[in-house]
Amino acid sequence: MLKRTLNLMKQDSKVALRNYFHLVILILAVLMSLLINFAIPDEVKLTPTELFFDNTPGKAFQEYLISEGVDPDRFFNSYEDLKSAVRKDGSSLGIAVEGELDRARVTIIHQGTESEEILNLLDATIESALDRVRGIERESNHRVEYLRSKSAPVSFNKNTIPIIVFMEAIMLGFLLISVMVFQEKEEGSIRAYRVSPGGTLEYILSKAAVNMGLGVIYATLLVVLTMGFRVNFPALMVLVALSSFFITMLGLAVSAFFRSLQEFLFVGVFILSILSFPVGSYYSPAFSPDIVTWLPSYPILFGVREILFPTGKTGFITSLNLLLIAESLGMLLFSYLVVHRRLMREGR
Amino acid sequence: MLKVKELYHSYTNDDRYAVQNVSFEIQRGEIFGFLGPSGAGKSTVQNIMTGLLKLQRGDVLYEGKSIKNISAKFFNRIGVSFEHPNLYNKLTGYENLKYYAGLFDVPTDDPMRLLDMVGLRADAHKRASAYSKGMKQRLVFVRALLNRPDILFLDEPTSGLDPNTASRVKDIIISKKEEGCTVFLTTHNMFVADELCDRVAFLNEGKIVTMDSPRNLKLKYGDKSVKVEYMHNNAVNSRIFFLDDERDRKEFNELLDSREVQTIHSQEATLEQIFIKLTGKGLK
Image (cartoon, rainbow over all chains, first blue to last red; front, side, top):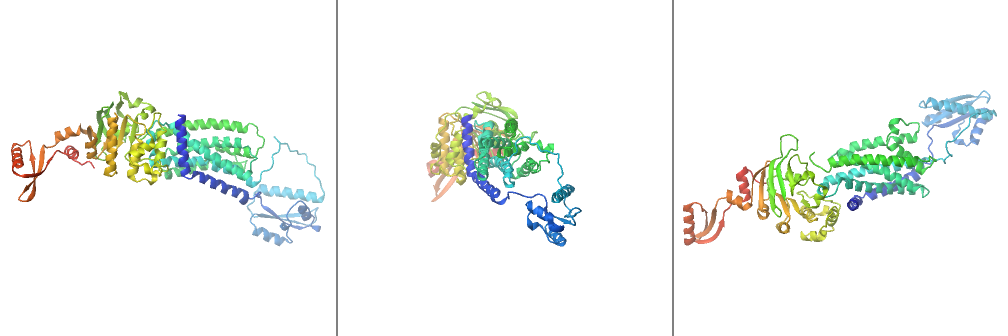
């Protein structure tokens, strides 16, 4: 069986190479690394930009904010200028402070799309800043405690790497296996395989191995080009390989139900979209309904992030790998049954 | 060696049978031809015999063992050539054979030797996608020989081949028979069947119409007649004599004595004529 599986892997690899799958992943990895390194900014401000007009005596509020690092260009000389600037920039808010500092009158000019939470937060922030200008120090009895040692902040562009590893390197197997299966169906070569001693398991394992290889190469290349060599590559490779195996098995089982790539594509894209839901939770951790966390792709995405940007969650990766092994075995069994019944036999 | 018993198959899982009550036996070293027009059920029977199609009713026995109980190792003993070439188009001819050879648990033939046998040595390293239909057909044919099979299933092995190559393929089939290989040949080409087969079965609308050696079929269904071409008044004339008829026999003998005979041909029926006689339709 091993000899036959290796023979099949050799053949599947040759076909993959001649389908230019290696070039596809090479070009994608380079393009994505260029995007991450040069096109996506390090920081992206997701809240509105505040613009100011300080009409207090001596402009003490303006001086304080500039000393705190606020860009001087965000200050205007009149209320009308401020209003006009807010009107021009749809992602901005205007804050006008007028009168004596002790009884300062604050006006917030907003676009009308900001949430109540943002405005309340802004209100509290302005009041706190004014207190500092006034020289009033309020006592605070809150303290901050960390579950584990504080990890270094991750820049916005680097934070997208786990998503690309997850969406491209891992999910790639889902589509590539279907391309392989439909090509064999179209050529009829699968019929010739059926009248050989080759079994269903070898057929599946060979294709899965080629896809795992492509996924691991893609992920490694992308991470090297964007993060260099200071990454736990063995852990990354194991996680990508296991995840890729699981996703490939899923793709194989689904594609066995369809006669052509065109028929499969709609359902394939639908399944990929569902598996991509955890990306929403990745950017907004508060968005994590059970239906999303139950998806097998959810822990995979956060597992990739944990390997690339460790936060010290000891045991998480090990338990994730064990979970993936169990899930992959289940999916292998399912794929085996589907492929055996639908691809290895006719007229059933 | 090989026994097919009361085989039925329905693609619609009802009583609309593509194949019904098909039974025959093939002896070791025999070339058995399955003759019939397109859609007669030839490929269905072959697909059931090779395990490609599920056995619904009846049985297929290899040396007394039902196909229902055979293991994957059985495929080490058979070779299947398909009517429609099914190859990895991205691989070369040689790579296609090398890969396929790697699937067997038994010693296999040298791919290059096999390619040479069908005149494909020079094109061994061209991708299968660049092969013509005839070249693909030859490649599929030699792929079936890779594992030195005991039983060969050949579906239209000479279809799309030029006469020289077809003759080479027929020679290989005969040499396989001489080596003791059993051949199940599916075709609608009566000349191929006549030339190669020890016995043929005519299949029409899923049923076997008749089964015997080509010679016996011709004797049974043909007329014993001869066509004579002779010179008369400086012109070539021809006449057919039915030798079972006493008057014709007498006139035939007189003609041989009195005229300058140029050619004499026996007029036995062709397999196609017999098929038409039995089914009312041609083999195409």
